[in-house]
Length: 303
Image (cartoon, rainbow, N blue to C red; front, side, top):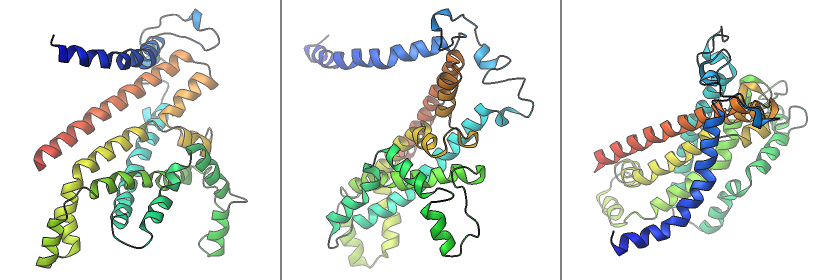
């Protein structure tokens, strides 16, 4: 081993040891508990039950008691909710973030102030913004219903966070409001690295700005855009706090993380909750691999 490699390992060692302690050991314990009947009231009495928590009579997958199908069970609903939330919110945040970033990249008076103001929703802690929106969306006293009724858009007040038909999409809307500035900031950073000479040449040639955006701007920022989308998608798949604060224990909006919390904390089923947590880890890991491969393929095509 060369001295350069040895030095690199010496610098990496503290990080690797810390990662082993705070990530690998809890993950290994969670996987182990997923094969037991551990209860939070007496973890020491846990017994090995094999794959029962995954495919047993009341397991996560292939549960024979789900007579109406896998997707009608709480675990299936939580998976569907999580992916609906992640895909829709990330798509909207990317579109809105791209628009905001393009506007903020233009020269205008007060641009610095506007850039700072746009970041305010992202700077507010998630719990605080969720409580704030919870008050504004209140079905009896919320300002949102009052405004919509004042404009004549609705006849009766809507329970935005309680009615199953509205609850999940209300959470998506709040998340888009909060996280669009994050996407805009990342895209704006990419826009500011673009060379100005190609834009000047396009301006001299009289090319329409929309064509310049599709043919020049978008291809040049695509690598940064893909990274931002991947980061945001993986974060959205772990969503818990926003849904929990806005809709509490509403089963119609429960995410996979919410399902894990309910089984471990409310019901005390440590083994069953660990199985759900392990499944969540594997699903996010699989999504990461798929996204990375798609991004690599796309970037290779562009190269």
